[in-house]
Image (cartoon, rainbow, N blue to C red; front, side):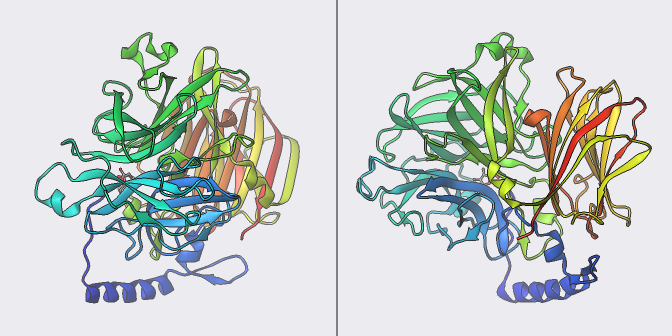
Length: 532
Ligand code: FRU
């Protein structure tokens, strides 16, 4: 979380004028010689971005009557973090979004920090009726005035409800519903209906642990337990938890997953989201035995090992007939989010993903892949069955496809202890590398060679890595490219890396470098995603 920028009105007008002039200067030419500004060059085609202003965490996500709702931490008046609102967008498919009116504004009790929403189908809160169930949002009030006094009890939990399917919201008259028990970092409530124990449960990040609360009516909350004080990644406040039951793929076994973001402390620096798998008895969450055997050796597992997927949580109220756990994260990192070279708006969300839980040889792991709805946006497909790779082989370039939005899939066979390097590049020497270093046992993304990196010392100072923990000689990889982001789903989504980049000229070629040993690149499928 960042400090608050304060601008006087004149300063703000002056800055806007400068930005308009700068934007004009920062224009560039695409292949068809059309002049585009940085705003257009950097705005993704199919990842959600706010029309203008600042955005961070996804908030209050629910599905109702055919629409996915996505609220988000938003400061509409500037392109850096400030007094937080909940912005709001809706979509029929999680890919094409319509930005709606702001859902929640800050008020005299504080800024509106992160939280979640649920559809109160049985009207347990009494805010609506069975015929018109209320949507109930829970969020943290951050009292910025109190925070400045040196007090530590400046964050509390509050609720609001909507009786018109999420379009307008009324704050509850007796807020806060959970007062601060003298914990400085006490925030980000996420509610789930626990059908197994017939109760609402809410998880909250409280300093270095997750606290679980339960309720029958979404208003009165009882503290149930705490989790994680000595588990997983620590060293910075935990933020934005999510907690839900999920079926283990291919079985009837049910487990509970806790997503728990931490900033800083991610595997490649800055913000990231770890997860825990275990059992929940209605009060207490216990780490699964397969992890618990030697807790000293327990290493954090990460939803995404790239630098740009933070504070991600799941949608509530997905119908049983669908049954998916649908996730979206904020595609940035607090290390540099306020400095990235977009001016009018800042930050995008990740591609929405379906989370699954698998058990591979006694280890529970989350796998994630882009939602199937993305496939509707494929406008052209190029398939190559088997590629012979000599030196640097171009797999596809701009003579065949518009390289800005792609969904690339391939299988690699016969892998040895070698390095397998893929490159997305252009003639102006901008290049994103990603691949598999099987010799030193890591997957990677390397954005060092992209033109815009100097806005932050830690944006591209290192290659980002994810550990390879199993042996394999064959692997499937899927890559989603959208102008300023790369999301790599290694091994069918068992290891994911998401990173943003800012190239001042569009990429125009996707290639692979020959490795020392021979291998097969098979079933290459490159899908053009149509720009909207
Ligand atoms: C995470 C976070 C949350 C907080 C919000 C404020 O990115 O710091 O803990 O609620 O951002 O914008």
